Image 1 (cartoon, rainbow, N blue to C red):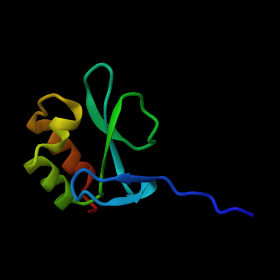
Image 2 (image 1 turned 135 degrees about the vertical axis):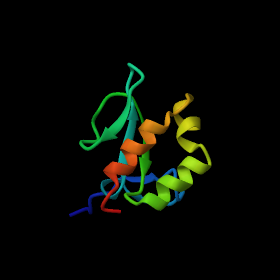
Image 3 (image 1 turned 60 degrees about the horizontal axis):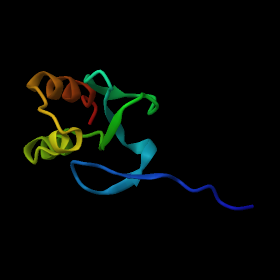
Image 4 (image 1 turned 90 degrees about the vertical axis):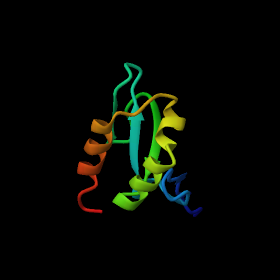
Amino acid sequence: MAEKRVPLRKGIGCNEQKPKKELLRVVLSPQGEISMDETGKKAGRGAYLCPCKACLAKARKAKRLERTFECEIPDEVYARLEEGLENG
């Protein structure tokens, strides 16, 4: 029996490829709202982050979310993302 392939995604903070299930998805909805996607199925453009604050800090410093979503990211969004990473 063939082994099932594990989908890999690259985290925008650390730039490492990891299994999709280990990463958190941040999504820009068609309405322009940025939020965490726990299910991984929300509509919109997605970016993946490792579940640690260090990765979020790297992504913020390099403005990787801004480049991915092609828009300005307010400080409130980063605060909400950091709250979602409390365990990391």
